[in-house]
Image (cartoon, rainbow, N blue to C red; front, side, top):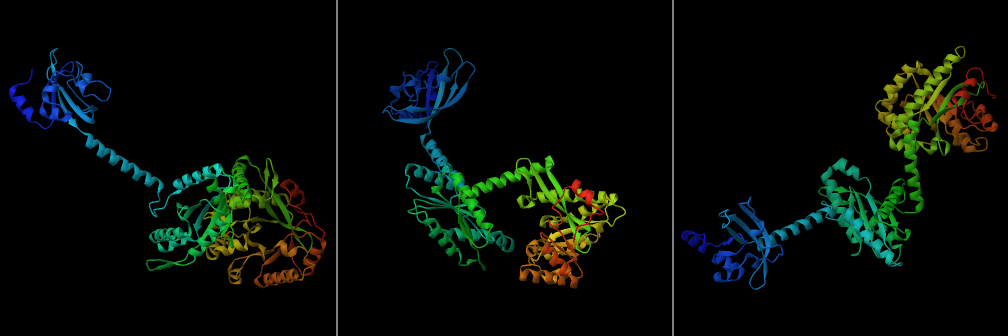
Length: 566
């Protein structure tokens, strides 16, 4: 027992923690009963043996393997071996008693196997819970988008191995869900989502999967279908189940769903592609009114890709100055004089040539680019009009008609912008006519009335474009500060041959006379149409019979003295 004092040995002999004393080479000089019991030996069997007797890790004996002249204490965890061959995890704490050549090392040995096992179980449970949280929607408890994609990926694998295997992916969202959130609060909205998920599950089989993708959007994998038409039957069943109102607390809530469907027969390479196409089909349904579910077809993808490309090109077009303004004359049917021009936007696309507004304005409207684009048209066309007024100072000034979209009408700065353009171009407001459709005006009639009243303070004229094809309320029409009605071209085409068109045109002219506004007939193409319009005393017209839309340079020589044959 070299190196230990008798009182110290007595203490160590009774300790519950295993203790060894070794020389620098790892030879055991002392082992207390606790360490002997831990390893399954008698004390006498250990004294004189090397600590490598315990090593089961293949990393060398402890504690001498970690000892250097610079270290006085250290700790380690290793796999150790008992006398019977069993292994367990031991934590050792070693201290140098003397740093001389004959110094000794005292090491405490603690069996931490159970502690590490408990920690591993806790860690595994935590990882499982974390994985569950990653793959599960916390509100409904359903799988989330990530897990649904994994399940669809597995289905794709089965489809590639078995050519007859069929599946479908459905993406659905709830109609008017935002009204529930806005009107009843997000708590009711959350409860509705939970109730919807519970009502959807009975519509599916045990092999199918229902997931909440995001917000009010759900995804469904219909697995191992016997016939692809089964997907349509499930879609019908879902819509029937959702038709019954939901009782959320004291509130009765109605909702329905629109559904996009992607079929495995399309031949997908990845799960994201299938979900994307189901979503494209859903968006197609949302843009309609009657159909509640739609099956994806490749044309939808081509359209979506083309639309995205158009949006990208549109953004670049502003920077590259690819837009052009053309002008179509508005002609007096009394004497053939040009009384005004309508500014018409064209896009000189670098690859597709000159594009008409119908090919890109809807995208500009959806993306909000119509604000910038409309402002550009107003600024440049007003500048051109001012230039024409200066060139024809001895002639009656002509007016300029510029279209305003719904986004522009709801733009908070529209009045200030028009005022700024008039000031910068030096144009008198009475020569500017702002056109908007009936639909734009009536979508939000009361706020629109306020905007139009503010614009009228700038002395500009306000005209209703494409009149007769919208849904004007005569009550509002009387209240709006309107100066002109433009009869839609659909009523002018072959008007001399169609009794109902003649009646409509006469009615519009009578209405205009009663409320004190003028009328412009659009789309006049033939001499017969012109003859009828003169017969019913329509004052103004425009169309290809007089002139196609002209560039600024083409229009300039006509301003002033030119007369059309009427």
